Amino acid sequence: MTGLLAAVLVGVGGGLGAAARFWAADTLKARRPDGFPWGTWIVNALGALLIGLVTGWLAFSDAGEHWHLLLAIGVCGGFTTFSTAIVETVTMMRGGRHAAAVGHALSTLAVSWAAVVAGFALMAALLG
Amino acid sequence: MTTPGRPPHQDLRLVTLVAAGGAVGSVARYLVSLVLPHESGEWPWSTFAVNLAGAFLLGWLLEAVARRGPETPRLRRVRLFFGTGMLGGFTTYSSLALDITQLTGDGTWPAALGYAGATLLLGTLAALLGVLLGARTPPSTFGRLLRGRDDR
Image (cartoon, rainbow over all chains, first blue to last red; front, side, top):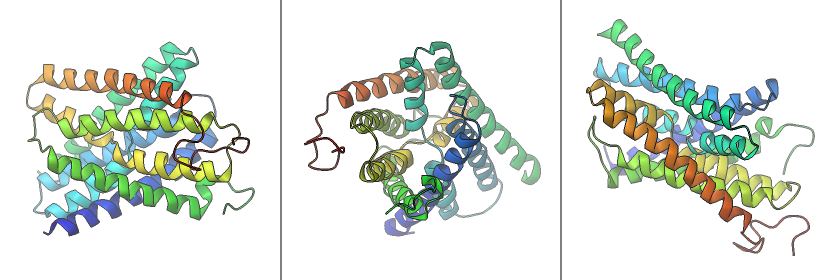
């Protein structure tokens, strides 16, 4: 695979992922306007589940490297975001909500980690 | 540019703007991973670097935009393209979580906890530094890009 094709796959996946994140996070935010950034929290957990599923699928099938670039590096990478999550943590800290800020940061990390494990285990059970 | 009455995330032009920024940011993240490659179970320097850099830049951008007063349509496009799109696509939580899983899967729990802790702590610090810098960024920085309604 040429370097240009690899970059195109990542770019297309990343663009689709980012647009889906924008739509999903703001839709969720509008439904639960309670000051906790649920939109980004749920998007990151879903994206982590998806990268677990994709990594498991690739590990137990002979699907090619282009699927990894499009789905894992592109779609999952563009859909999830570290920068928005951590700036939301900092915004909560600056608002004096220190416990909520720490809870937000640690729960995002723990849930995303568990989602990767669950996604990979599901694919291992189905295909392994 | 923006359809009145419609929330930004349902405006196709703004969604397209975020997609374009996300594509650019994702390709940039991929290029960094080619420069700083890592094997499964090693400390993922490239994800570590893009997440810290992206946290700093997003903290700076959002604070600089917020300081301009009520968000004009142009400031909103700047925020959505560079922030939600580019920096959102540049940074990643899925790779962060996947790399931690691979470190724990290899039995290297201290490395996994160290990587997770360092990313959260230094990421928070980077975002805070960005916010402090954004609060001190004059409206004239980058030409008209960051100018609000009442700025000269």
